[in-house]
Length: 325
Image (cartoon, rainbow, N blue to C red; front, side, top):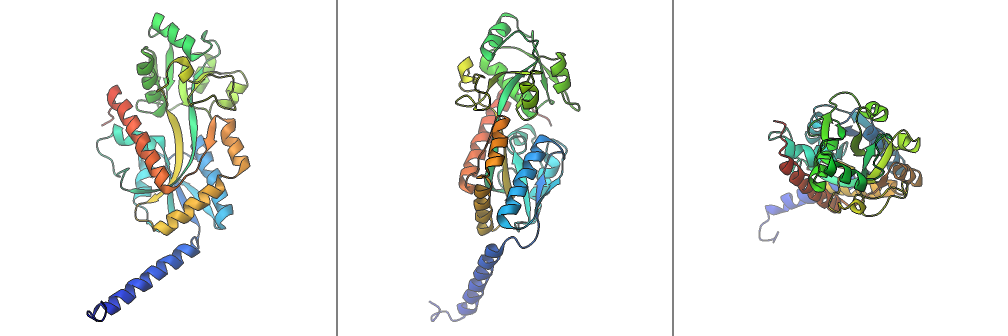
């Protein structure tokens, strides 16, 4: 071919050199500190999880991984910043249920495209959702609560983190699945846990890290938890499936992504590093202690996971008829 088209020889040589350079670059990666954009506030539970995985990646790859918090506007500010960051492997992103599965269904116009602007690297872990109650609530489990609500609709107040939040949509989903009515109260700025402990509101649907300590101290109680089987850290707590809601399955997740266009070799190296990081017994025990599971996978597996989760939340949001713009 090159004999017939001699002018192609220089072009082919250049292509070969470029491929060789990219391969060498990926092999050497990372050669400088790596920024992980987190679209949530410093000091929050998700922020702690992000910093834990950054520390593990630092150990595995021998280069500093650090978290840059870009909170605000329902995770939109940080997600936009990550989508527009250079696709060179030195700007990564912590995606969540809210930012990549929920928000795209709540807003008609966003400054990023959740499906096209990111390259999935690996899931970090999942957090089962709990039905968390004030101790004064008579119901001992979700089955008893459902029976009570069917007899007395709107007799229970459920705290949420605001309209369209994970806790709000989980509550809407529960009402629809159980065929009950509750009074959903938004807390747009302050945490509802103080009021929940005091009994000013009776219930909340949430991932368990924020509540686990108070549950173990007896200041809150757990009526049910998502998952196919009971969780090892809360073996006495029945699942929602045991309460007759087998299809009620909201989970909060976090995962590592990069801007679209990041070299595949870099993504593969990061995915392998994440798999190694997930072998940390200390980190795994920590996630299990608050009702979660440290879980890493391949870029293809993570992409399929996000797609399925986004479709699931899309159905919930359409049924709830929630739109924020």
